[in-house]
Image (cartoon, rainbow, N blue to C red; front, top):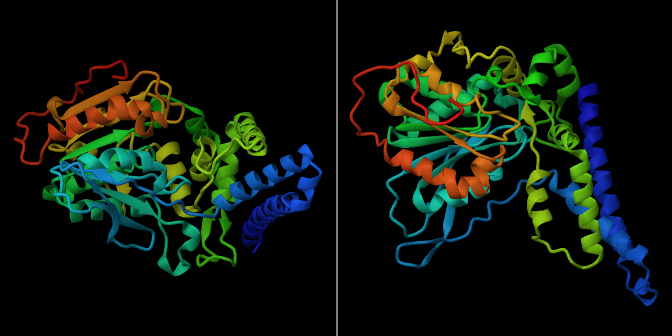
Length: 429
């Protein structure tokens, strides 16, 4: 019960702050105060508006808000979102552009389950829809999943990817962003041994911790020094009475958000102080830069406890993917079995979450893959977010990824030779 009480206490604090913000805004906005202009009242109303909006966003799933796509006929085509496969822990979504022939490129974008919704990749999705038949993994908030649905750990995540790959067929191209990169690699290796004909055409891994030991960061240092018992005691709680997942053990989104903000607390504090002043001076807008960023950043989701703990223990502490020791139901998944799927890695020189060297390690693990099926790119000056959603992605990385996809169709000639040394053309090699 103490874990449930802690969860409900955090939700109570969030609710209270949301109420305080709404109350301050309403009180300071009474018309009578306009008869006696006072900057303090303007500031109170601005503080209330920013506070209420911020705490309300913490329990709201953002909308996709996808713009229309301009087709070859120069007309706008609306984008509809269809649930291709429904599941307790996540859905496979399909972005269908109305009245447009399906592009030749079929792509599955694998979104992280790391505290934020798949909408974190909204800009990535918007950039890919015009040129691809796009699908995405949409993981559910664990607080909405009843305990009766069972567990969900890194093996279950991998098997979900296997199911999606089988469903979409061998002509699909996988793009895995950040956290799911090692599990997407494992899912491909699993299919290579269990059902080779169901393997995807290509696999692009962007900023993922394939081998966390290759280039230590604060994230990997945390994984190395933390004791699993202590981590479970400090991070895991049970969902409170307010949600369908009551009683489920989770790593709460609000606790994750606290960790996110604490890493750059001064930057976030300044951002909110500046926003309050802009609101007070009438210079802010509902969709300004601040709100656009924080509406997404503050929207957090609970992770299943077993997924979070198994990720820390197996991916970071034991480095099972990096050492090619990953198992599913006790059976080893050999990454060396991948022999026909083209693999590309993308890294950023200023990535402080998955530093250069961690992701490109995948190419060395693919010992059965010829050099002609391997590629890598190191984006100069790009941080973690920039390699999949920023200017670096739009201008440099996206064109290279699409070029890589086009160069590796499913009906390409199968390689006849094997090579263990990856063919790379940048400093990350």
